[in-house]
Length: 228
Image (cartoon, rainbow, N blue to C red):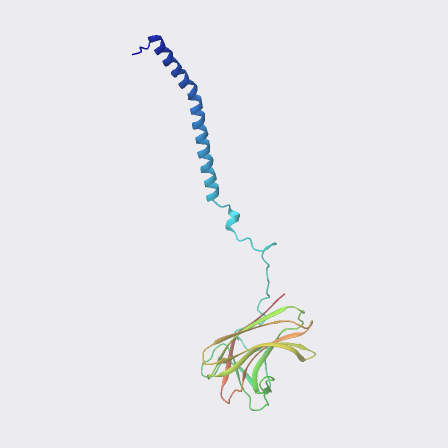
């Protein structure tokens, strides 16, 4: 059996102490590097998990959204609160305000038996309606939008809303929407037109086809606006 001398033992202990002493700075450096790596990872996760404010916005198209400006209502007394001034009945129609049985703020279109009614060019039927000039001189390419509320005294009444261009007192072009009122409730009609003739007069027309004696079409809340 080999015996180790105390001197040999002390040398071994001294060498181990020195090795540990040299190893300490290296372990500390490794630990510091580990901490730095962890912190960098946390910062990266924080940045990746929090999108910038710009990523939350809808960027839209280049140059920003386009603003379309419309004129105020071109119909002064849109709800017929005062009278029916400015409106003109078509030949064969009679125009009054409200009704004798139930006074209200709306226009009433009825058949006038003393004059011959206007003929609807599409159907050949008699057209009873009212018209109002809203633009005296329109710009070509401009848009005109119109809405109206109508009510019939009977069901199955065909009605229309029309925007017409007039030049020299004659109709040059028109855009219209037609509907069949299947009940006696209020309904809304909408129509829009792109002006095709520079300087044309624009008028709005509301009417009903083939009104019978004693029947009526009620008109209310007329709105007309123009935009580029």
